[in-house]
Image (cartoon, rainbow, N blue to C red; front, side, top):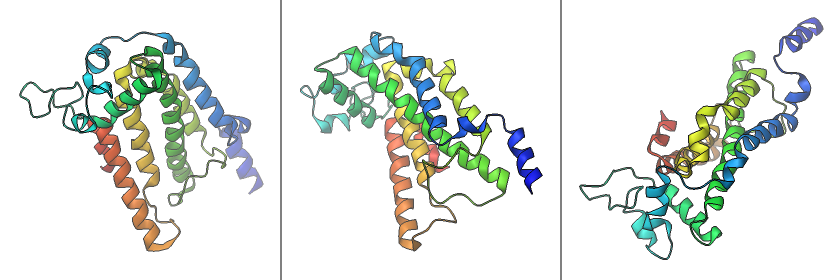
Length: 234
């Protein structure tokens, strides 16, 4: 038994210290934040001009909340023949919040929200992957809840998340303000996966039903940030 345990530890890709419950997560969040922190001082670029600068729905004083839910992502009435039909009202509401916090269309506040969302998405991805890889290693049933103080039992999950955090494919989503849709959708997407009740869930039928309802709400929210968020239910 002792030799088996030792051989498993030696075969791990990442030293045990880095898989400590706090150190591993700080490493992931720190790298995710550090890679894109400089974009906070950038300007609006590309599609930001239409989604933020020219979109009156971003200004709380220009349109009502009802307008946000009846317009597409670019501020055109969703029923119009010229509408893009991309329906992301929660993303537009997050733009309105950035507008309010920054006292207008201040690029810094819009970019800051994106930069802060990225490490949060990475931390949730780490939890999802850690659960999956640990189940594969131990052939155990899914865990019933997320334990943030539990050590990261899978080196593969940590390495995959670190690669995800620093991969340049996320540059447009994090550095471009319109990428808020992907970031927020991913945040709720992974949250819905973690909320889904497992066979080992405790608390009885009532808790299981509540977790299932929470899963549906989170997946629905992911969809309202960006359409493909609904695939969390697939």
